[in-house]
Each structure stands twice: as C-alpha cells, then as structure tokens.
Length: 460
Image 1 (tube, helix red, strand yellow):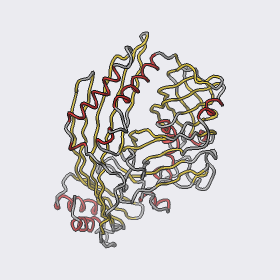
Image 2 (image 1 turned 45 degrees about the vertical axis):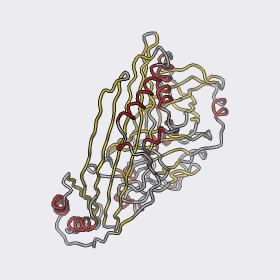
Image 3 (image 1 turned 90 degrees about the vertical axis):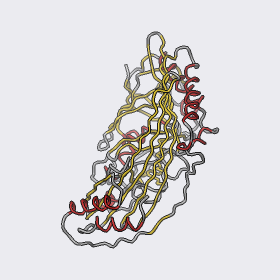
Image 4 (image 1 turned 30 degrees about the horizontal axis):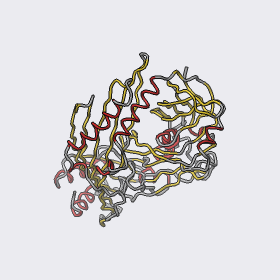
C-alpha cells in the first residue's frame, strides 16, 4: 500500500520534534451493500474509504492528524503538521522498519468483491421469500447483504511494518408481523470474516429468513411482561451482549487507565461468580470480530479476562498501556483512519460451563427466559445498564411458558456477574457492531445459556 522506505521517511518527519513514538496507519476499504424491500432491490451502495493517519506520542501526550492524500508529498505534509503540533524539540528515535509477514488464520475462498451482484440478490431473495411465506401474519420483510474488504497497513517506530486484509460478509433480514392489530419486528443477521463460501453449508439464507419471521410472529401474539425482581435465564449467542456491554467495556483500558471503570485496580481480585470465565479472543478462525493484527500492528491473541471469577487482565492499547504501566494486549481498534484508535473488544464471551440447559430452566420456579437480547445502554464508570429483551418467555415451575414482550433487564455489571450462578455447556456467538470513541467496529458476543439468580426485570 505504501512502500517501507517512504513509511520510514514519513515517520522520521513526524518524530522530528521530540516524539518518543511515531505511527502511520493507512487503509483502503470497499463497503458494498444491497438492500431489498418486499422482494425487490431497493438500493445498491458502494463506498470507498481511503486515507492515512499519523500519530505521535511524547510521554502521555498524543497528537494525530489524517489525510486523504497518500502520495509522498501528502504524507510528508501530514507528518509535518503532527510534528509541529507536538512542539519544539530534537529527534530522539531512529526509524528502522522490519516487515512482518503474518500467517492469515482467516482464509477467504471466494471474495465477495469479485462476485456479481446477481448472486447476492439471489441469496437475499431466498431469505426474503422464506420470511414472507413463514406465516400469513408477516406483513413486511426487508433485507440487506453487506460485504466489506478492509485493507490496512501499520508502520511504527517500534519497527513494525505489517498489513492485513479483512474481508467480512453479513446477511440481515428483518420481518414485521401483525396479530390482532399488534405489530412486532423480528430479525436475524449472521456474519463472518469470510467470503461467499459462508453460504456453502454454514449459513442458510432460508433459515435466516424463517428465524426473523418466527420471532416477529411469536412476539406479535405475546402479552406484556410483568415487572419485578426475579431469576432470569439468558440464552446463548447474542445473549452475550449483556456481558459485552455491562462488563466488557469496563475492562477496556480506555476506561481503566483513567480510573473511570467499576473494575479499575481490581486485578487478582474476585469480581464474578466462580462459575464465570470470560475471554476476549481475536484469533478464532473466520469469526466476525477476529483480526490478524490490531490497529497498532500487534499480532492478535487470546486473553482470559476473568478466570473462575478472578480478574486476570484488561484489554489494553499502547497509549493507555503507558498510563497503566502495562503492555499492549493487541486490543487497539478503530473504525477507520479518521478515528484515533483505543482499546476495544474482538470476540468476547463467557466460556462454557458444566450445567445442563434443562437443569438451568428447571431451577427457576418463577422467572424470565430471555431467548434473544436486544440493544441497550451502559455507564462504564458505574456499570449500570438497561437492556431490551427482544424475545422473552415466562418460566413457571421449571418450564418455559407463554411469550412476553416489552421486557428489559436493569442492573449493575459488577453485581450481575456475581449472580451468574449457573453456566451451560453450549457456548455460541452472535454478531454485532460496537460503537465507542474509536468508531463502530465488528465484534462477536457470546455465552452459553446462563442463569442470573436475581435481576430487576422491567415490564408492565
């Protein structure tokens, strides 16, 4: 993307006024999407993002500038702006880059950018048809096919010169159902760090459409959830969003380094029930949130955040690691070159336990079974959260009974992970886009079926 010798010259200029670290991040990304409404193509969008960012540190001071001009003159001009903003001083570091050729643990067999739109439209149409035909209560179906070809280069005064190509593909279907004048929406949106081979047996578009319609129909016929404090069983897969939001963000150095986290200063302490082991792993082959390198050029790794209830580590980027006196954990991520990178999650999940699913449900005399979680909000300083339950059911006498809508889960992350007292064996993951200070990035959330012994359920 940018030759090594040019990167060395650019970094040299950026560091010429006394920086003790300099970094160049360049990208060329193609975002492609096809939207379908009612079985007809509604829009086809192509978006190219290309540019570079140059960043320097001096102690705990950081300066960054970005440019769309990646010519030699454009990069050198940007580097000079960064150097001038840092202040007056003399060069203190030498720039000697060494190319890193990393093994690609996320092979792509059939790049979507080389595939005709007609094939993608056929996949969308199959999913939409399955949703419309699922039940006569289905009133509307929309779908989106998304593929991203994200190419990045990182060069830094640490000697790093590395590149990564990140191809991701996703199919999203949304269905609206109406029963007795009540409408509800269901959705299903699987994705992988893969190409079109994702649809060769791994993800069935027909099953995706049916699942979106099923959820919409079930919820349209449901009554409202009663409010109260009760035990809740949260299903696997996207149910892991509750850990991601309520606890995961509080384990990122962007909060911890400034003592703005409920878990700051608690390494080695018991912060969760002993049944909880939580992991962030960017090395899972072809997973939605996986990376070969982070956005500072550090090779991806598996991090055990919590082991049997004990806090083992945080997710750390280079800059916040300076403030904490700790090394990077390959957790630096950014949406694009125009964002300043910081510590973020990749594939974050509660590991499988030993409890049987049937025992988890049977243990609840009266409570809620959250089959599918929705969106929510959290304050990483206090850990207080509020999450919607997109698909829920009342549990009575150890049995899953009638569906209920309008449920929400309210609590505090540091308290809830102490109350996860049963953890199933069937860990699965769901795909999402996580928004934070460094933009929106692809992340996986996951867990097996878990039981929270007591939590506030909002409803009517």
